[in-house]
Image (spheres, rainbow, N blue to C red):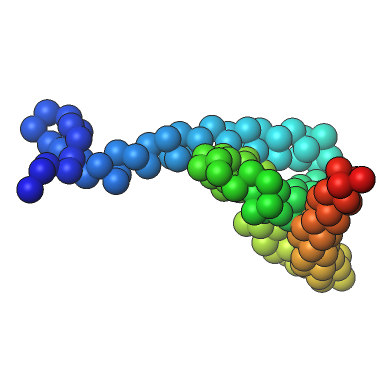
Length: 154
């Protein structure tokens, strides 16, 4: 039986399957860095006090969900053969960009500041906005692809 491992350092060997995951880890990391930097820039541009509606986080999460809907439709219908595209854009860029952990912290801060109404509006508004955005991104992209196919047939 052949040795199915690759060198992993002095006296150690790594299974070939794990050695092949390095490109995925690299693109997820690079994408995560880009997404986190974009999110940070938006949070700096649109700051909010603890009891106020967190517009920057809302904008990031809803726009990120819209882009996830677009991306998943394009990957499924147009770019299916690109192994590193989904990890880079989906897990990396959009995973680093969206921030549902900050969403929870924002809700907690609004509650602590005595702004229960704002916290509830933010909680429900973000959920509704995010779910609607994913659907709109996927449906809009599917419609655009079908329209483009119809135009090419003419």
